[in-house]
Amino acid sequence: MILMTDGVTDAINQADEPYGEERLVDAIRDGWHLPAQELCDRILAVVTEYQGSNPRFDDFTLMVIQSE
Image (cartoon, rainbow, N blue to C red; front, side, top):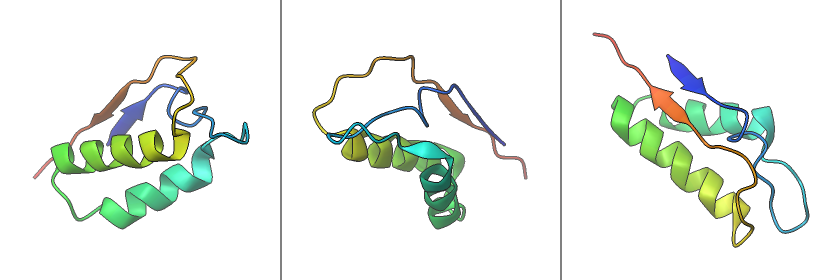
């Protein structure tokens, strides 16, 4: 289960384009095999890289819960 605020998908790059849900789904799909903490870290890294030097204008909350 992945819980997040809209600050994840609303993160914008240098061209003022939002990260968006499609990119988020791709990041989740690419890292789905990872343990929860690693997937969370990976999503954070990908969104941060996309955002570049743009400051965050919204909260950014992300939680990945894994059950066995």
